[in-house]
Structure formats: C-alpha cells, structure tokens
Length: 393
Image 1 (cartoon, rainbow, N blue to C red):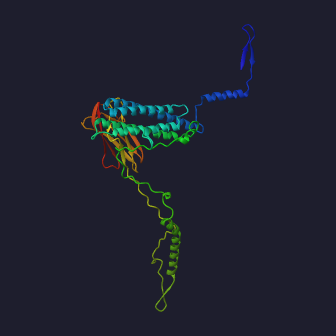
Image 2: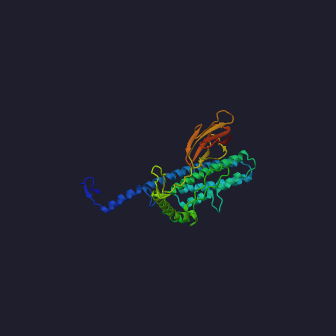
Image 3: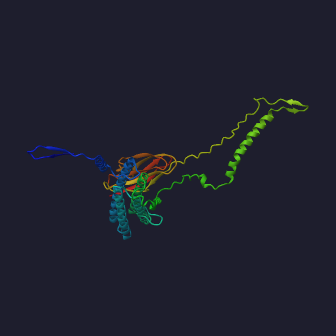
C-alpha cells in the first residue's frame, strides 16, 4: 500500500507500508468465500448444482399445484349451494393452501428444505395409517354423491384426480432430491424422526390390471430343508453312479461271449452299436417365464374440461403390464364437427411406454361448448379406451 503525504506546495512523499503474507492470504480467502454459494457438508459441487435445479423444478410444480387449488376452491364455492358440500370444501381448500405454502417456504430456504418438515407436510396432504390426509378427505367427499352422479359430481371427481396426479409428481421430485442429499446441519438433527411417506390410496375409478403376474418367490422365502435340499444333496451322487454304469456297460459289451459249445460271439461293430449321448454334470437351464403382455391404464375415466384460457385437464397414461407398448390418442366429437379440443397443443398425440412408465397429456379447450370422447389405442389391446369429455362454459 502506498500513501501520499505533503501539501500542495511541498514535495510529495511516497510511503510504502508492507503487508504481512498471512493478512494477504486471509483477504483472498474471504473474497473467495463471499462468492461461493452455500453447499451442505459432504455434498459435491455437481450434486449441489443438481439439488438447486431440483428445488427449482419442485417450486415450479408446486406453483401449478397452488394455482389449481385456488381455482378449484373458487369454483367449489360458486358451483355448490348445499352447506354439506360448501363448508367441508372450503375447510379442505384453505388447509390445502396452508400446507402448500409451508412446502413453498421450505424449498425457498437458502440452505435447502428440512427433510422432516417436508415429510410432515406431504403426510398432511396424503395422510398416514393413523390420520386421514386432506386429499383422501376430498376424495371421500367427491365419492359421496347420489346415483347417478350429476355433472357437478363428475367434475369434482375429475378435479380430485388432477390433484392426486400433481401430488404424485411432487412425491417423485422429492424422492429425486433425497437421492442427492446426505443428513447434515439441521437435517441430521431430525433424520431419525423422519417417517417414510405412505403410498397413494387406490383410485376406485381406475380399471385394475388383472393379468399382472405375481412376483417369483426368492430362496429366502422358502422354508429350510425339505425335498429340494435332499435332491440337491443326492444329485452329485446320482451323476457319478450314472457315469460308472455307462463305463461298466461299455466294457461288458466288448467282452467275447460264448454260445452253444463255446463258439465265441463276434461283438457288434462300432457302426452297429447304438450311440449314447451322456451330458454328465451339465444342469438343465431353468425355463424362463415370458413377460406379461402390455396393459394400458387411463386416469381419470371422465374429463370435465375447464373453459378456454382458465387451465387444462390432465389425462394420465400408465403401462401396468410387463412389455412395452405404443399408444395413440385422438379426439372424437359427438356433433361430428371440429372438436375444438387439443392434446398437448395438437389434434392427436402418441408415444411409447415401457413397463411401469407413466405419461401425462394436457387437454385444453378452444371452444365454449363441446362433448365427445378421447380414443386411446395401444399395442396389446384389442379395443381402444374411450374417455368421455364435456365442456359447458
């Protein structure tokens, strides 16, 4: 560092003040630390970047979830007049927004979300074996209707299915985030108290897959001992006995035999002798079970489309079989004219699903009134799956 001393008329004096090497190193270290983002202990730089990206994806999905809950809550209060419906719907809608706001606050933390806190909030939405979650309560309320259900009852069921699909997506993104994290900081203080998320409740309106084969039992599931263990112990002995008998039989066949008054019998030539093929010690490979055929599952079974410009309905396709499938979705209008309905912004949509894979189609309306069905064809299915839709703005 240099300092300049002296008045305007006097000479300028330059003074050099030396710095200690430790002070310079500390200054450089502090400048570098201020530029580095916070990273949990034990997490690499690459994993930290992926964690930040997953947090951003989770917040975007959560934002769509919150918008749908607000829109549905407003429509519930304007669509229903029965207090038995409006009061519990208002309570559930308010509780959903409070829980989702808590998730948004956790994922907006600079140090990342708290694992126990996020698990508690997700359990509030889904429920535990001892408590009923907000979405199962909403599903029970949607299923409690007169027979046959009205158009408003069907719309409520479709809205509940949409919320369950979005919650399933949030749970999958949360599992991806947990795969990159290690308990540290405030996480390690609560990691022992964290409980696993329960599975999603079954949807009674989804067609069950009846041709899925049960899993094969492993060796650890079989009781010890029994006939199988005895056969495994005797198999080497039996193989050795067979080999010995074959060798003895070959030697005896080559010995001369007497017939009548001692005239020797000429043994069979090599060309006349039967050929024996012995596979000693080669175990027979187990028979492989062919994979089960593909199976297309479509959720929900009925679509109630929102008015143009207010959102989109979601259709979920899943392959619950054991083989891949190709699918194609098209729109069939009841009136025979242009349907005015788009699938992911197109008139038709298609794709490929491996066993266990899931995909979603965004269905939007371009008109104020329409009625028809979505026809989904797939490989392995003899008839297409028809999903009725309706729109009345």
